[in-house]
Image (cartoon, rainbow, N blue to C red):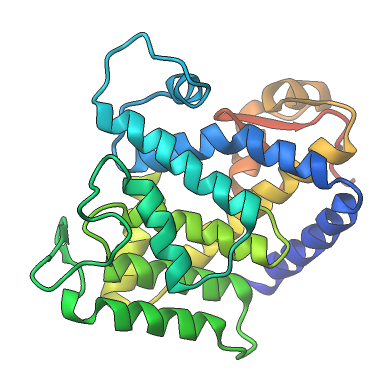
Length: 294
């Protein structure tokens, strides 16, 4: 779980974001579209895609890459972008029908035989030492997870999103595409609450993503996933507030030099989100005019 200080910080940032968002719907859409290639690249990289961000951008712009790639990786980039674009365009409700429709888009041209459906009897999946739920019960388990998420029990919203994500991945309802769909669903849940989407990063998946899913499988604890989502949401809020309100955003190192903060200290604060830093194309940035309170 996350502490009261973090919850208060998120509530304050969310209020600032909603205030800054008023009258800026187009700006927020442009920000979301601008980060779409990065979101696609990171999610696919978690699944071991070899495409770089630059190559992902070229593919999504309709160009070819200089290196040859497995055609599946190209389809994965294009299809995941379509799913994410549909989320931004239509903001559909979180239902079984929505999940299956997005899965159909995701696996089109990759696994048409499995696209848009849950695993059938006899279709078992394994990820490392984890075996997905018995396919006989997948639909019911997904429906249970949706019901639990929709319950108005007063639970903290990030706890509910984290638990749903962990449960979805433990069920592993599809033959393929479980992780990518699961991460899109996180953003769907946040957008439905009037909050921005987040990007789960690939470079730390072995230390702060996969282990959190494994912990849930062992102990039913989603506390670590809640903490990760809290950091990612703060970063996304900081990014949008900075872009909407600040004159210029600059690399974190340049800002640190200007205000007399050691670069490693600034980087650590950025990772902990105790300063309003955020990543653009993998590089930490911050509003040039932001100053810590004395």
